[in-house]
Length: 500
Image (cartoon, rainbow, N blue to C red):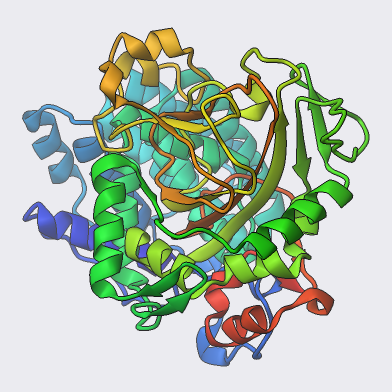
């Protein structure tokens, strides 16, 4: 897995005309541990995951170097000096610092030293300290002490990142998390937070760069380029037009709608399945049934597990048209990342942060495609999806707002930066399907009357650096035919889930 970084970073340096030497070739990439994938077929010996002990510090330092001189936009003279420091010419690799114990506590000490050096502008010392920290970590991994050393490193990075907002440290945590993800399939929350920090610090350049690298290594499937789905037929020309609409304006609204019978079944499912209730910004302690005739909550989220157990929702999540659009937008093989379904009511007509009724941008994944489906008629008074056009692009968000990181923002603040015509409301009859890039500023408008039922299906280009969420399970008893067939032919799409 770490060898992927070597390939990525080499391409990054090549684009800049910089020569570096990397020690080994590319192998197995972006595939979590087998326990987190659908075991349709046994894993072959040639498809085994990388071992953290195989981590080559060159790849991690290359990532740090690239971040330091490209993402952080250092002055040219500093960039050149940094390149001179990093040549990867040492045939012996690296080792633990002399006269220091090889233990987890020393990792924490070296990381702190690197953090201080960076603050003082001592870039050579910064890299040396991180080299030593990672050298100790890998030696501990090789001696079978992965769990304890990883725990210490995780705690140190989490604390340092929160306190210092040190960008090289964020890059370090992202790099280390890749090794852990490769070995265990688990995502560290501190690395997810580092990704958010890097996104904000670079005004989206970090996400776009790493996503571009993923497209080079996980290119789209040959399937999903033409065919028939629930919203009609599609081909390459049609997919290009939809993708262009997303890229140029943030969203696309399909001209066709879901069949009325399907909307009826899904609405009945949402009325008979208990969900997580929200009332005045608070989460209710017990699941509740939503009552349309006499709503008692501001909103009600159907648990993802229950949504996944529904055959109709499985059919939507595996629809060829949806997958084709997602794949075209991601530029890579899509992974089903999230399925959510929720009611919104007009009980409290003031904006509810828990119900996403204040402007914000999403950052749950590295890159993703979101489908929103209205299962009730949505007017300007019944909670339309709102967004600010083109704010999903790089450099499209004000630095002053990004400095506040991942927060909800009042309408009046954004109106100071964007013209009125960029604020868009999407209304539509039930069955309307919207697809877009929710990296833009968006929100659900507070309802003035009635209620709204919506489904959201998300596809991502990787689960690495995603948020830490409860692990739902795809249960074989609930499989529909499309899902089972797709899981057999394209198992990566369901790599987030476990089959019982």
